[in-house]
Amino acid sequence: MRMEQLVALCKRRGFLFQSSEIYGGLNGFWDYGPLGVELKRNVREAWWHNMVTAHNDLAAPAGAPEPYAMTGLDCAVIMHPQVWKCSGHYDLFLDYFVDCRESNRRYRYDQIAGRWVECDAQRVFVTSYQSGDDAAAEIEQKALKFFKLRAKDKDRLRWEPGVTTLDKVGETSRVVGPDAKSLGTLTAPREFNLMFETYTGAVRDESSKTFLRPETAQGIFVNFKNVLDSTRLKVPFGIAQIGKSFRNEITPRNFTFRSREFEQMEIEFFCRPDSSAAWYRYWRDRRFRWYVELGLAGERLRLRDHDPDELSHYSCGTADIEYAFPFLAPGEFGELEGVAHRGDFDLRSHMEGKLVRAGDDFAVETDEHGRPRYRGSGKDLSYYDDETQQRFIPHVIEPSAGADRAALAFLCEAYNEDEQPDEKGVAQKRVFLKLHPRLAPIKAAVFPLVKKDGMPEIAKDIYAALKPRFPAFYDEKGAVGRRYRRQDEAGTPFCVTVDSQTLADGTVTIRDRDTLQQWRVPKDACAEEIRARLG
Image (cartoon, rainbow, N blue to C red; front, side, top):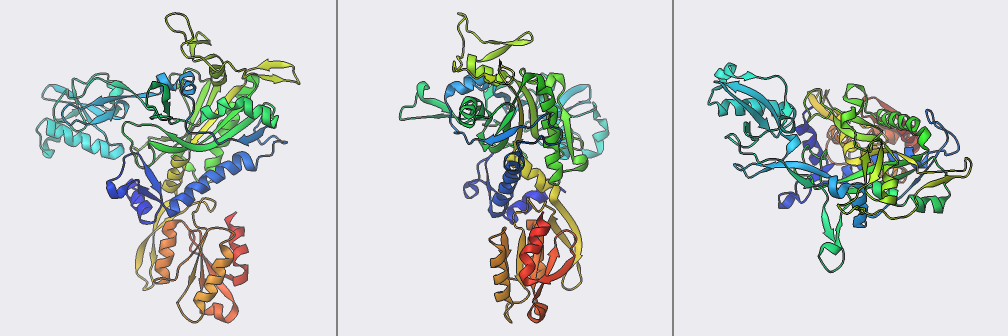
């Protein structure tokens, strides 16, 4: 499958639309259509049910060191600016960008792909802002144009092995920019903070400047004590949150994979320092299983531990759950979820102030006068264990998933094509989304075979019986084969057809989306039959 096919299907069937499309769209923002909003809601509900609703805090799940509790929060999008200063986002939440003096375009420094090539004793780095096979093809064409060669002369190009990114090259003087024809048109890389600025109140000045949150985690950390005091929970326990975050990405790309507005599903799990390593392994393995159980499996899904040089300065260990999206080059993976062992960095930062590493420990960052640069809240965010009579700052394990990326991965994995005969017996390509029934936007569609003989009335009665139990759809327009195809593209697991035999014996046909098997059940048993198969 090529990504273009999925994007076209998403628009055609109402999964996703470009935001503000009638005005030309706004890059990095997407609107979920009638089917997309149901799919994303199902992803969120599957996550929340698994993490919070169905969790038994009196028994330890498989792999857990001990029983634990889970609860939830829904925090404000705009928080006190000091939150982002103490968390490090104010100073460190940034990417590097370069400008092209020829094309007047801006690029993220680490997303410019390229290869070194030599011809006629000249060695240059030719770049592209595409990804995967598209990047390789564009780089070759640009190299031919730069050296003024025809396609038949491409053997004169001597390529160095491997595609890399510009940030690993470390220079711009011998670089042909993504939309440039000359060398050295790119500026030196510069910092760009990814937080969206806004203002609260009537006066727009530095004192009223605030930010749209770039992540949901900090709302959980600053409410740690509130949750403890109001629920009487005991460590270990977790706090879950689903919510919107905003990052002013320099160049959003790859459909909904990298957007400026997105939704996160995060857990901050608080545990004792001496058991935090075991909890990290538990959450890393458990979160990977969740994706497998909902249909992501095989070589396209992997769990990858970060190398030491990838770790954040506060991290004691991080693993990424990654998926081989079709817009990536063969062998490349994109992050779905990160599971990080954050130690006590976050709670301690909001107690004392912004922390920096000092050897094996952290110290409060100070200015040139020795005063705390960013003061913490001064509140005691430690925990007293009345059983061991010990006071400590809990360690935190953070599984952080993207709801939009998860929905995109499930769509990519579900996309299938085969050939099936139409009403005249002619083989036709069939596109269908093999979504897990729990994620499918519509669970069942109901059709009268024809619009006469009382079939629509019976079909509408069945639809009315299904609708209160799960999302259902009624359709009586067009040939039944075309109606099946529309529902296959929507990912609907089951279709119910009322036909002439229904008039005779009261049974209807149920069709399975994946196997195309059909069987008959009494019309009054339709809802229970489908409910049982949805799982």
